[in-house]
Amino acid sequence: MQKVLNAWAWVVLILAIIVGFFVVLAVFLVTVPFDRDRYLAGRMFRIVGSTCVRLNPLWTFTTDGLRIRDPRRPYVAVSNHESYADIFLISHLPWEMKWLGKEQLFKIPFLGWMMWLAGDIPVRRGTRESIVAAMNDCRDKLRQRLSVMIFPEGTRSPDGALLPFKDGAFRLAIENSVPILPIVVAGTRRAMAKHTFQFQKTRAICRVLEPIETAGLTLADLGTLKQRTRDAIEAAKERLHVELGLGDSGEPLALGVRSA
Image 1 (tube, rainbow, N blue to C red):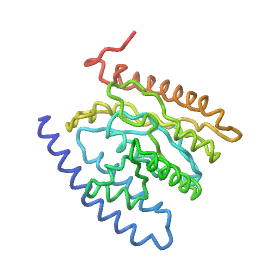
Image 2 (cartoon, rainbow, N blue to C red; image 1 turned 30 degrees about the horizontal axis):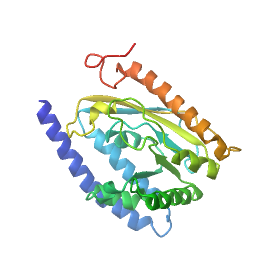
Image 3 (cartoon, one colour; image 1 turned 90 degrees about the vertical axis):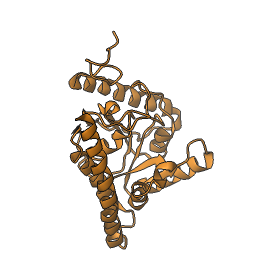
């Protein structure tokens, strides 16, 4: 049965992405004359992502926490990163954010094409010129009153432990005087673990925490801001693990062992 459900999940995922591409393309073509920042095309792309979850019989994803009242107030949103499923989970949030993503993702047929149409931002890791260009694109999005979404760990955690945060997102927030919006995901590590292509029956939660203001901060405060954000995300992740019955590794307690 697990194999049947996994095969079905892949079929509906691929079909939803292919059909979704043409829907996002249509929205882009209709709205581009008056929606130059691609807000509506981006929203449709996130709806495609959340629809993929609803069609997957193995995933139960929910969101809670803070609800943004003004979707055009820009934030630098940051989240822990456990698996590719994080993208589908965070897409359930009902406001638009432009995502900073690996350049390789933009080359995937249909999925990557939708990322381009949505106005997401590619970056080639380890290449300074690409990183500088991506940060400039992020600044432009913030000036257009659009939030940007960044995984400050830079990659998915291999064991569920929170990795060190990189400076980029926090430097961006300070230099542009916009708040950091901490987002926590829990449960997705088992949904689609790193280096696997197997869906697992999973309940996952995305929780939005209170924004952290950066007004008046300078780059001298970067380390403090980064640590404050990381501490908030780590504490919230631990609480979510308890709610979901997960161990420290993100695996169900029946399968994993919680450290003392």
